[in-house]
Length: 335
Image 1 (cartoon, rainbow, N blue to C red):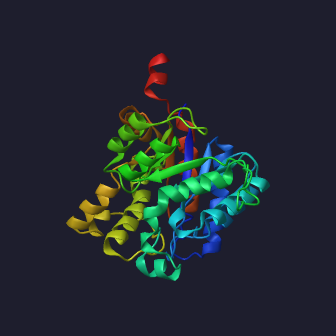
Image 2 (cartoon, rainbow, N blue to C red):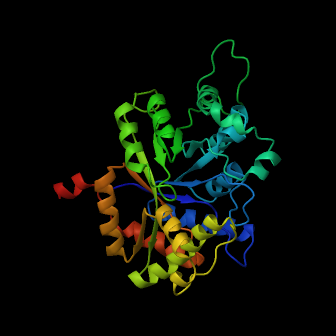
């Protein structure tokens, strides 16, 4: 079966506070563990009232403390916002507390707007140093060497698995060059997915961490008992993406009966393009769509985003998805 994982932005729904979102995410992580999901990632975003995962390493600790076996990590840490030493210390601490369960996915985007970038004292040019920062972080998590000027404590010698995240060819090239697993953000930026995967596989160089390429694609999935109910639930996600187009991001909104009354033709086109890699419907409808996606992409693992207004519907969606039993094309042919 294809491994399934969760990407959670810890969404805050209208009428709720960040504390509610954090408790909802813990409940989802516990359900994902029971249902056999491989890993549970949260992402760094700042200055967004609808996302409660800004203090990403703290949220990971919260989720890991409430679970027992599922891998928990960052998808990702926006490394240009931080010193590699500080991230090595934070994730080294998480690894010391939850050994063998921590992932560290790295991105080079700011995860915020220009105002928050200035508030974080972030240099806009810092993203240019992303490859060097990854190498520095990798060295800090490796075994210390004699004469090393500074160490991450905890962190040194933990060999926490690093991932490169991306939505363009840059990340795929870097992941291939460094011999690291690669996760593509096709849940909001699907245009370069196939090309990025091709580049990553063609250029991959084996490393101490990975002997072969390993690609993950993140997609939006909403599963309900019927196609109609899933499509209605999905309107919350569609509204969120329209808000991104309008530049008016806020909290998750309740689903609506007719999305066509909500967006203009231009907004529909822009939001639908970002949401092109979304799979919405009954279990059978979603199974067919995802198996076609697996055949097209050949990814090794699926990571699923599902930001729904109704917490119970969100839990149910992940539960139903886990019961589908997705298989890669080779697995289906052999059966």
